[in-house]
Image (tube, rainbow, N blue to C red; front, side, top):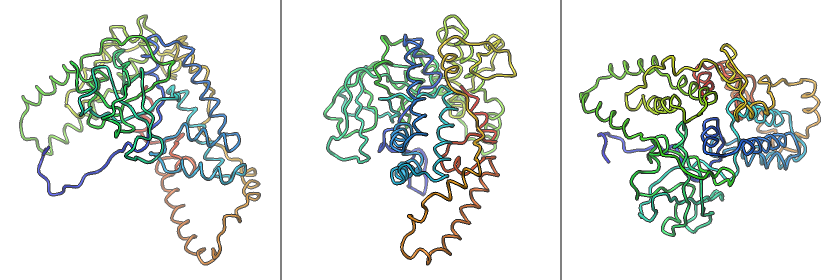
Length: 439
């Protein structure tokens, strides 16, 4: 494929399938699964299990290590593997910084649990989608092989799924965006690990049935948790009409664009971006309308969101929200304190009420830290000849401290543990603040 001429032939690798990535439920997936017949108690039970795991972070080192292994994605931030190894080495002796790290991680996960219903699901993964080049899979079938060995060997070392699996793609708003497919064993595909293989056969590609996805790098949410397997698929939304409109617009406007056109479009995109408004309206209306996500207004919002999410790529924006599509009030779990609110009795409201409150200000007791620091056996970490490296170590530590303080000042981050862990409890960036309000 030669899209355009270029002098350089180098490529960047964005993501690999070396590690399977754990996934979580979110508010939209919970709403759709609930509409497909999954009972409230299932979600409440999964949340209770996660809260017990989070409590284990404050327990003994074995429980803390096991929880970190289950909840964190090791391919995203290198500190997770270091922290687990460090905890195993220290056992019950934790230095003040490690205690801050585990506290920040726990608070961050509780925050996401309360504000986004981000619930850990066992036997579930986020996998890159690829196509079955052997043409063996039939419509409704997929091939999945999970290998957690951290080594991609030629011989089959992974677990091959067999049976029903739930597959979707974020963001998902339409009841048909979640599909129940059948995982089968295909010997010709055994070399493919930590990906989901979709069939070539069928009247319509499965990825296109899920929020209009494709196989150019999309990741898919996969679960074989038995309690999340629903009975029947709903008719998927037809996203092809939007692709047709985009192609039609491209044909009509087939002209050579200048950098000025690009700048104008970028400004227009910032001015009319209404993705978050559509998502919030869908979330609020689906909770208060009788038919939920199947209500005509919610289906219209689902279509609008699928258009708005591709605005930057296709140049077609969703229409502005009319008064009829704006919720007159908001459920309490959305924390819209400046708007009319009501107490939701449905699943998202129940989950919110069962989640403990959190404090984004991680207060550090200085006296406690001094006692912990003075009693910690730091000398056991010293190596022979360490005095020869003290001068260089002080220089490196000074550079590290300057970089950390610069980042803290620039973004309003409270402490070093938040930066190292990647779990930012408070963030003054306007873009981040905007993203956290969505869903």
